[in-house]
Amino acid sequence: MRILVATDAWHPQVNGVVRTLTKLADAAEGLGVVFTFLTPQSFRTFAMPSYRDVRLAMPRPARIAKLIEEARPDSIHIATEGPIGLMVRRYCRQRKLPFTTSFHTRFPEYVRARVPVPGSLIWRALRRFHAPSRAVMAATPALARELTERGFDNVLLWPRGVDTGLFHPRAVDLCLPAPVFLSVGRVAVEKNLEAFLDLDLPGTKVIVGDGPARAALEEAYPDAIFLGEKHGEELADIYAAADVFVFPSKTDTFGLVLLEALASGLPVAAFPVKGPRDVIGDAPVGALDHDLRNACFTALGVSRQDCVEFAANYTWEASARVFIDSILAVGAVLPGRNGAEQPRFVA
Image: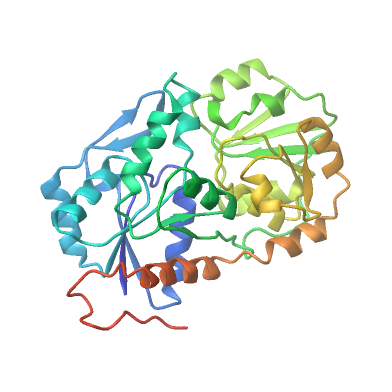
């Protein structure tokens, strides 16, 4: 089975969408499913306003059609609502082809953090974009319920995973005053990092990641350590060396970094909002509190082994199985690719 994923978010971007799709494709190989990606790398791009590190594609319909037909997919999945997603949606609609979509980003909150646009207008546009989809895949039960309540149809749950082979406890010393409070992610206004950086905490605050707000935050908070983007073993070492993972965002739909931290034995401190609440719930692996400082101190007393055991329940293979099963369940297989038979994959 060959699945084509259309995404406006791709390397060299570092974010949850890119990591999710990359890990999904890796895990699906073991199930006999091949992923191909339609990304901005195939088109001319321009810098996204207010976030110049993100490049938006300028796809042409003829080029989109050529790339899809060359890929010969058995199924098409649209991961983002950007220019590529819109063009692939148009291609499928014109040819009456089934497709699925996923909901990764809370665009109403992201946009309103930058521009005073009514959230109702953005939600209306998102509903229209996803309406023809055979299945709208959401990362958590709470997000799935919210989308359904907002008028989205055919919403299915698609959980995420974590690479426990990379993220696990290890003996590492950052040689910084303890305790080390760590935050990892895009350094942008919607991540609410000031709520963390403003806290009166002992030890050291460490920020891993890059983005449009980094320069201003580095100047405003000279006592914090900004390490920039980190990947692979270097990132895993930083997780394992910290004492608490602080997640101040109130807009994330899931937060893969939460699972990466927990798999590393790092307890979480966050606000009790969708995202951290959906991942952690009542599990004793962190602290959710409207007072983020209290959450940080409470998390210091959490068992690191409990965090590791909790994260072990999330695997990318299980995530890939759910994704593939959802496509088959809703009949989002292109006609003429596999005849009357459903595609089969290795169990």
